[in-house]
Image (cartoon, rainbow, N blue to C red; front, side, top):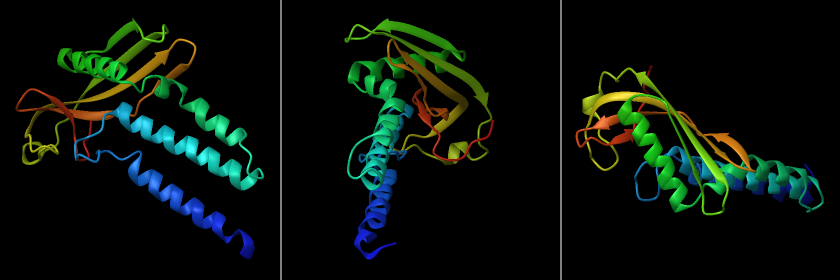
Length: 184
């Protein structure tokens, strides 16, 4: 590495470290678990930022293919990054979890584009130490646990699969992400 370019490697390491620790983490700054959609938004910020960084380091400080690829992968998630769509995704996921079966919901967003939310639900074995764990807010888990995955589609933007996650029922009847490693 040339002395005049030492900053490129340092900058790459700093940006990557900050982005991974802040944007795509499983808990928010309030200590509450982040939903799969919220984590996906953080991952998109990371991928667009990485694309910009790659372009800046390899393309004489011009934005190009790296930025386009990062932004293209995130078009659906970014389109869903508003309170109404987040609420709809969460409601659809909860309905699927409560019913214990797959669910598909379709609606028209504020931008006039049709959105489809498909949530698959599968049984997941409850961890042996389930009742010993508590959610971030102190709520006790009681089970059952289910493995879910949600795919969202936005007309004209494409589709994206959110990260699969294991969620378990709490004593209050809520479904929250399991903080440990579950099997199933």
